[in-house]
Image 1: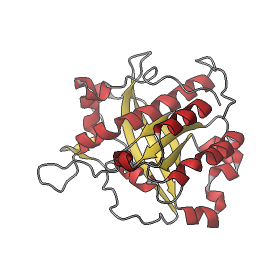
Image 2 (image 1 turned 30 degrees about the horizontal axis):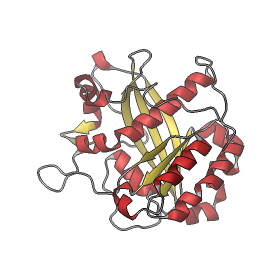
Image 3 (image 1 turned 120 degrees about the horizontal axis):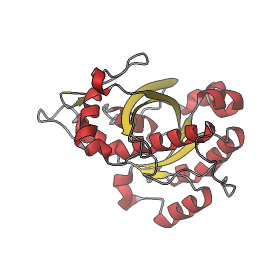
Length: 263
C-alpha cells in the first residue's frame, strides 16, 4: 500500500471556513440545517459556481458497538442514536463535501457513499463484505474506514487483523482509522503510546471523533448544520485527500511513493 499523502498537501484544510468555502457549503445546507440527499440526488449550485463531482464508495468497518452508525450520522448531519442498536442489514448514506485542491486552486464536490453493515448480517451474508471477494472490492469499494472506540480496548486490538485482511486482498484501496468516543478520553482503554506505536507500524491516517451530541439551533431541537460540519470537517477533508491522491497516482499524474511493508 502506497504511503498516504501528508495532511494538507492535497486539500486546503481550512478552506471551508473561508468566505468562498461557505458559499459552496450553502448548497448542502438549508437555513443552517444539513440537507439530506438520496442516492440519486445531488446539491444544486448556481451556474457560475458549477463544479465537477468525484464519487466514492466507502465501507465502514469495526466491531459492534464502536460507533459506526453514529459516525455516519455525524458525517451526514443526522441525529446520533442515543441507545445502541445493532444495524440490521446494510445502510447506505450519501454525504456531499466541497473541497479545494492545493495544486490547482480548483474546487471539487466529493460524493461519499457510506456503507454500514451490522455484524450479524456480515456473519450471515459474508458476501456483503468486499474483502471476501477481492475483485469486487477493487472495482466497487474505494476506501475503508476502520473504527475503534477509545473506551473498548478489544476494538483497538482487532484493527491489525482487519487491516491485514484488506491489505492482502485489496492493496490499492484507501484505508483510514478513526477512534470514536474521543470525548471520553479520560476513561480511555487506549493510551497515547499505543496509538503512536500503531501509527509507526501501519503508517495510516488516524483521526479522532467525539460522541457528544451535535450543537443545536436556537429552537433547542434542530441540529446546527454549520457547527456540525465544523466538527467533522477533518474527517471529510481527510477522506477527500486520500481518495483524490490515490486517483492521481492511479492515473499516472503523480509518482507512486514507496510502499509501506511494515503493516
